[in-house]
Length: 103
Image 1: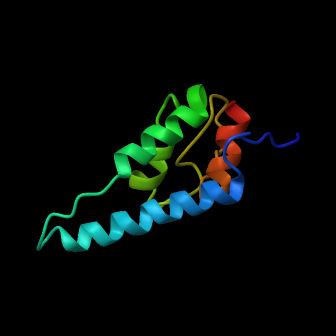
Image 2 (image 1 turned 45 degrees about the vertical axis):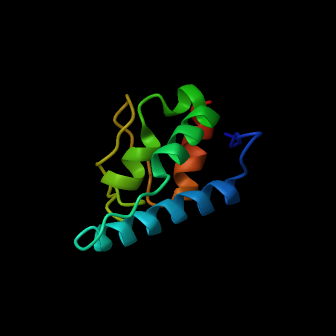
């Protein structure tokens, strides 16, 4: 099966954005113990959601960043499709490929 791609955002651009969000989230988690630091994460998620549309209707991007910690917490059997097959989400590139397949 040939991988689809977003016409608006390349795979490399998507990976860079997701990695930057994750790094900022980690940084803010450390800072929040001492000082509130506003960020634009929600705005970036909104833009990504608009780019991927129905493919992200289940909020895969936020789930990937916050629950899977950008894929670091992914393991076999954790994310399954409707047939019980693993959906591999261990890095931002795999998330991009998965979202593009849903488009």
